[in-house]
Length: 265
Image 1 (tube, helix red, strand yellow):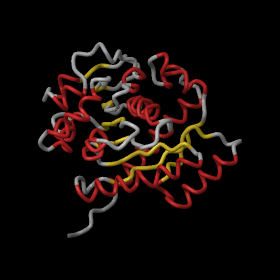
Image 2 (cartoon, rainbow, N blue to C red):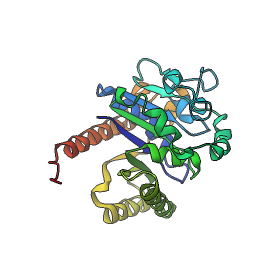
Image 3 (tube, one colour):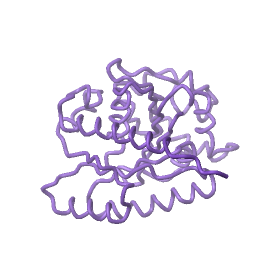
Image 4 (cartoon, rainbow, N blue to C red):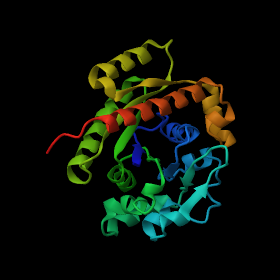
């Protein structure tokens, strides 16, 4: 059964795209069939996956706005990355306006993914760092939200706004949407504020906070400039080990959920 994750945070610079690319590669490394959908006009998940965002036949813009079948927009990433990609580039900026005039505008991505959903174990959607129609499409298409959070003061402020957004989407457009987990990123244990924020997250959200923590790591920061996930660029680095651990934690959570008995109606 396929799980669709939206990787989202309305605050930028929290490791959202880094997490999308590296989690996709890490899940693929566990022999899962994975698709990464880049729905951010910056196209950083595309370039970070080793694909030229200006040299693809079709992008997510064509799927959302021109009714191109999503199968035609699938782009292969380098073989050692192991996952399929739907690319994005600056053309997607126009989609934010064009979608407003379309019928079923909030469901364009969900309807597109329905064509290929059963072909994958996991579909990850890298969202823009803002609440717009692209993000709404991602949250409407998703089963679950992964929220990367940098352990700093303003992260908690942004988290409240995101939680309100997710709740509104759940009530109006996607009743099954839920928080999959909060992922602590760019973590520096030597920083007392990092530890304080981490403890506050656990206090407020309990087991919704992933046990895996993504550390500040030079190799993790370098990998996108080489167009590769960190597990390809430096598989022994702390960043690579952390994302592989996150993939394992997500798989265990999924297995636990599926193992739960179905309540009698």
